[in-house]
Amino acid sequence: MIRITRLDKEISITEAEFSPGEKWLVNGAILEGKDFFVVWDTASYPKDVAEMKAHFSGKPAVAIYSHADWDHCWGTCGFEFNHVIAHANAVLRFNDELPVTLRQFRNDHPNDWRGVKLVPPDFTFDEAMTLSLGYFSLKLYYFRGHTIDSIVGFIPEKGLLLGGDSVESVPVINDPGNVQPWLTNLERWMHREDVVQVLPGHGKLCDASIFAENHRYLQSLLEGHPVACPTGTEFYKQIHWDNCKRMGVAVA
Ligand SMILES: [Zn+2]
Image (cartoon, rainbow, N blue to C red):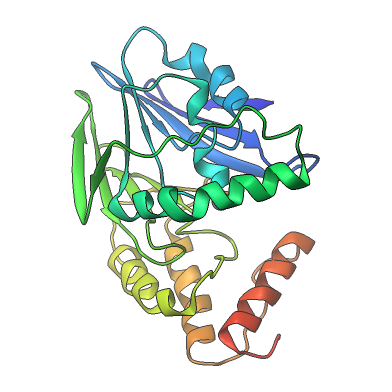
């Protein structure tokens, strides 16, 4: 099941369940431009995108991946998008990592992943790019940190930042080597006054204070200082525990 909430005339937020049998949600957005739609992240299942379809019909549609983690890009084959945009490093992940992950998932849960076909980006960028949507624009920026292909999208006319997993209540560290660039990217955004709302890849729409909160958390771990888990849910406690282990820091 997918939930679609309208933020304003042009922007809707999508929330989809991911992972069989779990209630955890992944966020995305549908942006209605003058001449085409943008779908920011396509969730985990083709049926999720098929359900969203009614909300982006009548004009061409472009999908954008915040990064190539499965829960953000496996729904794409549920619709024939005109283009798929992502960071250049996403192509590497589609070549090497994602086919292996899909095979593993199909081994573990054969019924759940039958319809998934991987759809790699056909348009990539390295540092930044701007899409003009007529009434507003979407600026994409490379944001290495959570993964090597993470990006964020900013709509200056609305003060809305689409964060993917670059911001989260407890940011997920996959590679300690990417924490320093992650901090540098967060520093670029935490002092800006033009960001009003931030949509993380998971969790609720929030304000720009999440940049500084994530920065404080990651900085502590990078410096080897134990830090308390920022939230109390079991899911995030586990992520916090994994982060501490990965960074070689005692669990606070
Ligand atoms: Zn995610």
